[in-house]
Length: 353
Image (cartoon, rainbow, N blue to C red; front, side, top):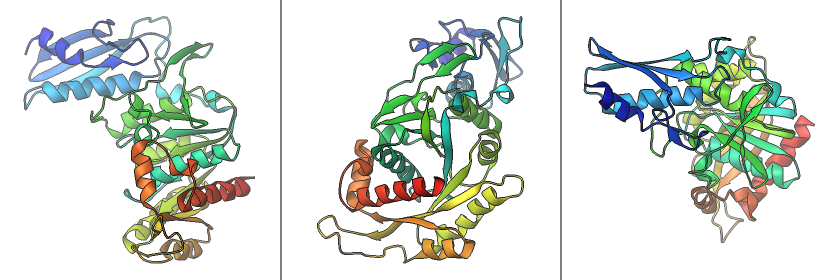
């Protein structure tokens, strides 16, 4: 394994904020060494914080893992090129870019597969359709789906220099400002990140974004209740959360964990209510018909058990899946699905005040 070979692997990592040039041609790879079956790479960053630093570190690690022979370990560390001031760490990030945001709402679920991201994207579009200024941060770092559901795949947000350092400009479409880690990863690329690195990357993706004036910033959280969730609720000034579930018992058993996370005495975030997704199947041609494929009123019963409101019941309609795949959220159209999401947006706005 030679240094040139390793540089070729690292050249696959491109910096979206610098003309999509690779990190080798940009001179960011300061040192490469091979010893004791371990490849060590040092990436150089300027004194002013690069908003994509955590992404680039993770992408470099992923490139090495893809190419190195079995048994060869890889380590990626960083160094600040300008030593006048130390490179600020993620803990130094503040919420100044969120000063113009009135309400920050987390969209969470106890488990995956309940349509949380679909609800989050359509809720954002429905709020915008009602006249509110809306942004959505896709914090599902291991399965970002916002680029697909908004047909913004392949687009890359720009970076802008400000007095406080570089910040990322969100993409805008359907009247909503979008930000997702998926904009910085190549299609099909697995983000090989441990918990702390994923947490730091997400904090950058939310706190270093120029959101501007917003009525609502929705955060599409990963499913579950792990390190990323704890970091988000502690480091982001989130005021409340909405829990998404489906009616069947296997999903409802995980709702309790999500509610317990936000109600924990060390977190103390309000639960605005539960959204029951996939409540029943309704044929497009016969909107009055309802078929309860996954059980009936499970979300309603769970809401009553925990003393929270059932904000909405979203039907299973074929167009929701088709529109999500096409990047045209159902909340922008007409029919039962659009009506359900608009009703949810109106109720959420009423509760938040």
